[in-house]
Length: 283
Image 1 (tube, rainbow, N blue to C red):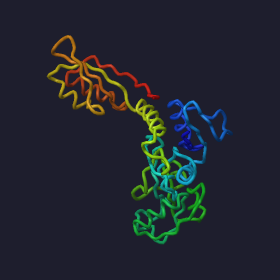
Image 2: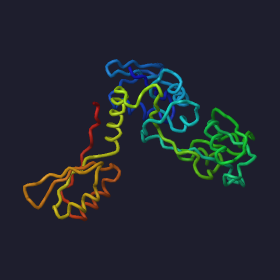
Image 3: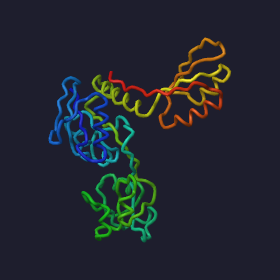
Image 4: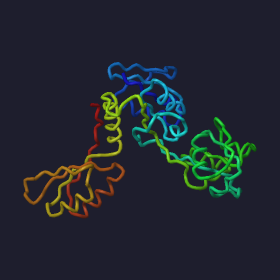
């Protein structure tokens, strides 16, 4: 039975639960439930602290985990990133007071940097030849400068609202760009049949979220131009219509680009465009 860790709280928890639910897996019935045994689907779900998931996957008896890339990189673990999940996008960045003279990486030398991601920050500073004191805090990192604990911070940034409210501004390049990822234990092979089923289910849901099926008719003479606009994953499906001069095309396109694609198709002579939602696969 596959053992999978999921976030019990935080920004990644709800979208992770939704992904698993839409993939056909049973979730917990109340917030106190720590383990869900889904025998029908051959899986056990363990609700753990997001920051601990990669540690459990790398060192314990958990096969897979849904967590953030930044949280994985902040651990000394043998867990590896197996698959991007496409939600929970954020950046891990430096931020200093608005009136501070700290505005580039070299300015951090000799300063105190508060963070909850000690290893990730220390590795980055060492790789760039910057010597600074890393101050570990478990939370409320943005308050550390005002309270005199640090000169600047390194923290996860989504919208930046919290930093601005604390009188801080980001600077320098992102330390890391993060999103939700599926992490894998070294004890489970990539070709493990249970893992392949689990991955296929997740990919089916993610594809259904990101893409739609588009059908349109086009003259054969205009088909090359239309295919350049809608190349699909590999190649669109083209079917002959009763009129020998026309063909029907079916192709998968990004949901966010539908309107733009339709306009471009009309410009090259496409007609009768139909957009259909994709059903997630649970094979």
